[in-house]
Image (cartoon, rainbow, N blue to C red):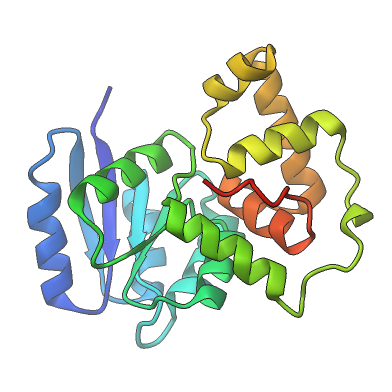
Length: 220
Protein backbone atom coordinates (compact mmCIF):
# COMPACT_ATOMS: atom_id res chain seq x y z
CA UNK A 1 0.00 0.00 0.00
CA UNK A 2 1.25 3.53 -0.73
CA UNK A 3 2.07 5.67 2.32
CA UNK A 4 -0.67 7.79 3.86
CA UNK A 5 -0.17 11.42 2.83
CA UNK A 6 -0.80 13.86 5.68
CA UNK A 7 -1.31 17.62 5.95
CA UNK A 8 -0.90 19.31 9.35
CA UNK A 9 -3.00 22.40 10.09
CA UNK A 10 -2.07 24.31 13.24
CA UNK A 11 -1.22 27.95 13.94
CA UNK A 12 1.64 27.04 16.29
CA UNK A 13 4.94 26.29 14.58
CA UNK A 14 6.25 24.24 17.49
CA UNK A 15 3.21 21.94 17.29
CA UNK A 16 3.72 21.40 13.56
CA UNK A 17 7.41 20.69 14.12
CA UNK A 18 6.65 18.19 16.88
CA UNK A 19 4.07 16.37 14.78
CA UNK A 20 6.49 16.23 11.87
CA UNK A 21 9.07 14.48 14.04
CA UNK A 22 6.48 12.02 15.35
CA UNK A 23 5.14 11.16 11.89
CA UNK A 24 8.65 10.59 10.55
CA UNK A 25 8.98 7.57 12.85
CA UNK A 26 6.39 5.59 10.84
CA UNK A 27 7.22 4.24 7.38
CA UNK A 28 3.61 4.26 6.17
CA UNK A 29 2.97 7.92 7.10
CA UNK A 30 4.38 10.82 5.10
CA UNK A 31 3.97 14.53 5.75
CA UNK A 32 3.23 16.34 2.48
CA UNK A 33 2.55 19.84 3.80
CA UNK A 34 1.60 22.24 6.57
CA UNK A 35 -0.82 25.13 7.00
CA UNK A 36 -1.24 27.72 9.75
CA UNK A 37 -4.97 28.48 9.37
CA UNK A 38 -8.13 27.21 7.75
CA UNK A 39 -7.86 29.28 4.56
CA UNK A 40 -4.33 28.09 3.92
CA UNK A 41 -5.44 24.53 4.69
CA UNK A 42 -8.09 24.65 1.96
CA UNK A 43 -5.57 25.97 -0.55
CA UNK A 44 -2.99 23.34 0.40
CA UNK A 45 -5.58 20.56 0.20
CA UNK A 46 -6.54 21.63 -3.32
CA UNK A 47 -2.87 21.68 -4.28
CA UNK A 48 -1.55 18.59 -2.49
CA UNK A 49 -4.64 16.35 -2.17
CA UNK A 50 -3.56 14.64 1.06
CA UNK A 51 -5.25 11.50 2.34
CA UNK A 52 -5.63 12.79 5.91
CA UNK A 53 -5.64 16.27 7.44
CA UNK A 54 -4.74 16.79 11.11
CA UNK A 55 -6.82 19.88 11.90
CA UNK A 56 -6.65 22.22 14.87
CA UNK A 57 -9.92 23.98 15.71
CA UNK A 58 -9.23 27.51 16.91
CA UNK A 59 -6.88 29.46 14.67
CA UNK A 60 -6.67 33.08 13.52
CA UNK A 61 -8.67 33.87 10.42
CA UNK A 62 -10.66 30.90 9.17
CA UNK A 63 -11.16 28.45 12.06
CA UNK A 64 -10.83 24.71 11.84
CA UNK A 65 -14.53 23.86 12.07
CA UNK A 66 -15.39 26.14 9.15
CA UNK A 67 -12.48 24.70 7.17
CA UNK A 68 -13.77 21.16 7.81
CA UNK A 69 -17.25 22.10 6.61
CA UNK A 70 -15.87 23.69 3.42
CA UNK A 71 -13.48 20.82 2.80
CA UNK A 72 -16.36 18.37 3.12
CA UNK A 73 -18.02 20.12 0.16
CA UNK A 74 -14.91 20.78 -1.95
CA UNK A 75 -12.94 17.57 -1.36
CA UNK A 76 -15.05 15.03 0.54
CA UNK A 77 -12.55 12.27 -0.21
CA UNK A 78 -10.03 13.83 2.21
CA UNK A 79 -10.34 12.48 5.75
CA UNK A 80 -10.05 14.95 8.62
CA UNK A 81 -8.87 14.15 12.13
CA UNK A 82 -9.31 16.92 14.69
CA UNK A 83 -6.26 17.39 16.89
CA UNK A 84 -6.81 20.13 19.42
CA UNK A 85 -6.19 21.36 22.95
CA UNK A 86 -9.86 22.25 23.40
CA UNK A 87 -11.55 19.65 25.54
CA UNK A 88 -15.07 20.95 24.94
CA UNK A 89 -18.01 18.68 24.28
CA UNK A 90 -19.92 21.12 22.05
CA UNK A 91 -16.89 21.57 19.78
CA UNK A 92 -16.41 17.82 19.69
CA UNK A 93 -19.98 17.19 18.59
CA UNK A 94 -19.94 19.92 15.96
CA UNK A 95 -16.62 18.71 14.59
CA UNK A 96 -17.87 15.15 14.20
CA UNK A 97 -21.12 16.28 12.61
CA UNK A 98 -19.08 18.40 10.21
CA UNK A 99 -17.46 15.25 8.89
CA UNK A 100 -14.30 14.71 10.95
CA UNK A 101 -13.32 11.04 11.31
CA UNK A 102 -11.64 11.42 14.67
CA UNK A 103 -11.23 13.78 17.61
CA UNK A 104 -7.97 13.74 19.54
CA UNK A 105 -6.54 15.99 22.22
CA UNK A 106 -2.95 17.10 21.86
CA UNK A 107 -1.92 15.18 24.96
CA UNK A 108 -2.86 11.89 23.28
CA UNK A 109 -0.19 9.22 22.93
CA UNK A 110 1.43 8.48 19.58
CA UNK A 111 -0.14 5.02 19.25
CA UNK A 112 -3.63 6.53 19.42
CA UNK A 113 -2.59 9.18 16.91
CA UNK A 114 -1.24 6.61 14.45
CA UNK A 115 -4.25 4.31 14.85
CA UNK A 116 -6.69 7.17 14.26
CA UNK A 117 -4.83 8.39 11.17
CA UNK A 118 -4.77 4.90 9.68
CA UNK A 119 -8.45 4.33 10.39
CA UNK A 120 -9.33 7.67 8.81
CA UNK A 121 -7.30 6.81 5.70
CA UNK A 122 -9.29 3.56 5.41
CA UNK A 123 -12.52 5.52 5.52
CA UNK A 124 -13.28 4.44 9.08
CA UNK A 125 -13.87 6.34 12.28
CA UNK A 126 -11.90 5.61 15.42
CA UNK A 127 -13.07 7.36 18.58
CA UNK A 128 -11.48 6.61 21.91
CA UNK A 129 -13.98 5.19 24.46
CA UNK A 130 -13.83 8.29 26.66
CA UNK A 131 -14.50 10.54 23.67
CA UNK A 132 -17.43 8.39 22.56
CA UNK A 133 -18.92 8.43 26.06
CA UNK A 134 -18.70 12.22 26.19
CA UNK A 135 -20.22 12.62 22.72
CA UNK A 136 -23.21 10.49 23.71
CA UNK A 137 -23.60 12.23 27.07
CA UNK A 138 -23.37 15.69 25.55
CA UNK A 139 -25.78 14.86 22.77
CA UNK A 140 -28.28 13.37 25.19
CA UNK A 141 -28.26 16.46 27.39
CA UNK A 142 -28.18 18.97 24.55
CA UNK A 143 -31.08 21.36 24.16
CA UNK A 144 -31.00 20.52 20.45
CA UNK A 145 -31.75 16.85 21.04
CA UNK A 146 -34.95 15.63 19.45
CA UNK A 147 -37.86 14.73 21.66
CA UNK A 148 -39.09 12.20 19.13
CA UNK A 149 -36.38 9.71 18.21
CA UNK A 150 -38.42 8.23 15.35
CA UNK A 151 -38.32 11.42 13.23
CA UNK A 152 -35.71 9.47 11.24
CA UNK A 153 -37.09 6.09 10.20
CA UNK A 154 -34.26 3.57 10.42
CA UNK A 155 -34.95 -0.10 9.83
CA UNK A 156 -34.19 -2.61 12.56
CA UNK A 157 -31.09 -3.77 10.68
CA UNK A 158 -29.90 -0.19 10.22
CA UNK A 159 -30.26 0.36 13.96
CA UNK A 160 -28.18 -2.76 14.61
CA UNK A 161 -25.48 -1.54 12.23
CA UNK A 162 -25.55 1.96 13.73
CA UNK A 163 -25.19 0.63 17.28
CA UNK A 164 -22.26 -1.52 16.17
CA UNK A 165 -20.60 1.51 14.57
CA UNK A 166 -21.03 3.42 17.81
CA UNK A 167 -19.23 0.58 19.59
CA UNK A 168 -16.32 1.09 17.23
CA UNK A 169 -16.76 -2.09 15.19
CA UNK A 170 -15.39 -2.23 11.63
CA UNK A 171 -17.53 -3.21 8.67
CA UNK A 172 -15.91 -6.66 8.54
CA UNK A 173 -16.67 -7.24 12.25
CA UNK A 174 -20.27 -6.06 11.85
CA UNK A 175 -20.76 -8.35 8.87
CA UNK A 176 -19.41 -11.38 10.74
CA UNK A 177 -21.53 -10.78 13.84
CA UNK A 178 -24.75 -10.10 11.92
CA UNK A 179 -24.21 -12.86 9.38
CA UNK A 180 -24.32 -10.57 6.35
CA UNK A 181 -21.78 -9.53 3.73
CA UNK A 182 -19.45 -6.58 4.15
CA UNK A 183 -20.99 -5.05 1.03
CA UNK A 184 -24.43 -5.23 2.69
CA UNK A 185 -23.04 -3.48 5.77
CA UNK A 186 -21.72 -0.69 3.55
CA UNK A 187 -25.10 -0.42 1.85
CA UNK A 188 -26.80 -0.06 5.23
CA UNK A 189 -24.26 2.61 6.20
CA UNK A 190 -24.94 4.53 2.99
CA UNK A 191 -28.66 4.45 3.74
CA UNK A 192 -28.07 5.59 7.34
CA UNK A 193 -25.88 8.46 6.15
CA UNK A 194 -28.55 9.57 3.70
CA UNK A 195 -31.31 9.52 6.31
CA UNK A 196 -29.22 11.41 8.88
CA UNK A 197 -27.77 13.88 6.39
CA UNK A 198 -24.12 12.98 7.12
CA UNK A 199 -21.27 11.35 5.22
CA UNK A 200 -19.14 9.66 7.84
CA UNK A 201 -19.38 7.23 10.73
CA UNK A 202 -18.51 9.94 13.23
CA UNK A 203 -21.18 12.23 11.81
CA UNK A 204 -23.73 9.42 11.98
CA UNK A 205 -22.88 8.71 15.61
CA UNK A 206 -23.19 12.36 16.59
CA UNK A 207 -26.44 12.89 14.66
CA UNK A 208 -27.98 9.64 15.95
CA UNK A 209 -27.06 10.48 19.53
CA UNK A 210 -28.77 13.85 19.23
CA UNK A 211 -31.91 12.17 17.94
CA UNK A 212 -31.96 9.46 20.62
CA UNK A 213 -31.39 6.72 18.06
CA UNK A 214 -28.60 4.92 19.92
CA UNK A 215 -29.14 2.44 22.75
CA UNK A 216 -27.80 3.53 26.13
CA UNK A 217 -25.06 0.92 26.05
CA UNK A 218 -23.75 1.80 22.58
CA UNK A 219 -20.68 3.56 23.89
CA UNK A 220 -17.58 1.37 24.34
